[in-house]
Length: 143
Image: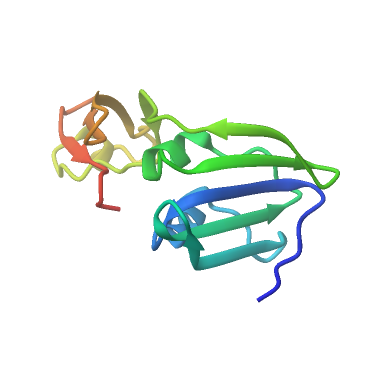
């Protein structure tokens, strides 16, 4: 299989095999207007298998979303066909409107315009607490 390199954009590499589709879903990239290459189950010397996402002409993605789903992935920013920046992801301290609170009594369930704000309480297990009702959500392995 041949996937050409991109002149400008981002390459999200070292994605755990099977999570690439979720990352694309959470990033909410318009697949009708952007050129996207999504490689599943590519060979990896480190992990055996990995997913890779290449997005042409898009350089600003929500790094909080990526850190939330796959903190071990790397983001390479490409300009003129060269890597100009490598970004190591981190689990974000706060996420807004990425995770939805599932507590039916939470204000976010009643007020449709209330932002869903979660604060990190356990980085290793990627557990977050809802700002309004203290509902706890674990993002490790559950999307």
